[in-house]
Length: 144
Image 1 (tube, one colour):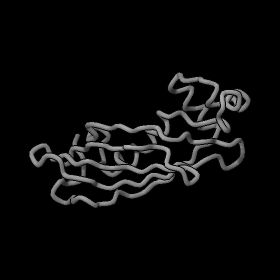
Image 2 (cartoon, helix red, strand yellow):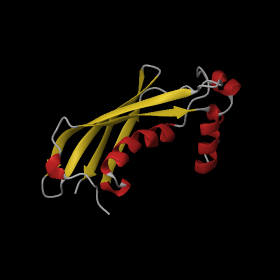
Image 3 (cartoon, one colour):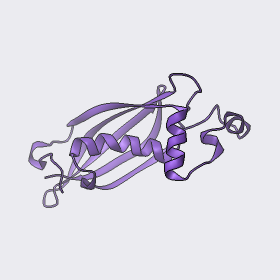
């Protein structure tokens, strides 16, 4: 399967639809079960504070995956993402309340990379509570 977005229709500066991803303690427990990452910083407030965190934090790989959804939803096929990387800059703090946290992700096409391979670089910005949580978030996407 290939991306549903046509390479010819995309230019640098093209903005992808922004998305907001809610994160609750329940979300973290479910992710821990799916990933096998039961580090107590992701579910035990007392432990998280003892190691110097402000509260329980979301799994970095969870945050990274949620951000990637902006690109895969836009491309129409997860397999169209041929490269993806981020730097973790700040944790997503998830309070134990009825709201939790929200990860907000925006993205835009930064460059056309290869006309023959029809690849573009997409730069992403992910924030939570007004703080940038991912740095150098970039995906290379092969378009139709």
